[in-house]
Image (cartoon, rainbow, N blue to C red; front, side, top):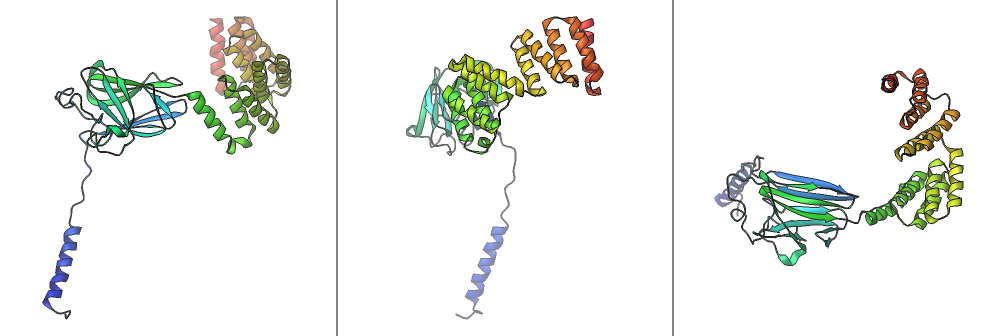
Length: 349
């Protein structure tokens, strides 16, 4: 076939026309969604819970038993799958769920509802929902609520180990509890973090030991962490943490010896922080003693007088509080003078 033949020219013309038609196809505009996308996040301990969903409106429609039929699976929102993600293992309504993302579906009824967590979270709504793909199902009791035009999710009553997830739409709320073993999760995280850069600083090991001390972790493991910290840099802070661990283990004599040793290594900042810790524990006389020692060791610091004055005030000794605040005022920078002056007025008024 010659290139000049009519059929060749017709084929070329067709290809150009097809290409032109393709180029001419309009690009879709981005417009407001009738059910706008939303997400909510809550951290429980070290566990992040994230719900992603779309928010339909009531728009004067009958919702329950109408737009959302009873006894049929519902996507708990609009458009694509509502999802719920957990960064660590959790329990929902008492049922265990591994870390990951789940399709969140609900089965409404005139009585208790069912909340389903599907291993398939990429679906469009609930149209392809298959109960065989459920990781867990839990019952949920509904409760009446103030009218809400648009559907929403929120978190209520977050604690160190749990929170309540609440779906709210129209005049109804659907709550269910998500909980996690924060202690186990935190310990696992600490052990993992100590494999990285924190292992090269005394602070990382000491933070781990201190957390374990405060949260009744394994004392022997925490003592090993404390020893790692002390090997890198022995100081007031990590000596006192080890003392607390030894006391918990019942070795009171060794604990007291370490506390005495820590005082010899304490900086002005260390002693100041320790004094305020005692004040927070309502051990006012002990706090006064620590602040007085700080004044003796650091007489050129306005801050030690300021702290001692606060301790005297907490004890109810207004005369000594005023005298000590006055000494602090004479030495303090301009940025602190008004606050100290106000403290003195409060004691003399």
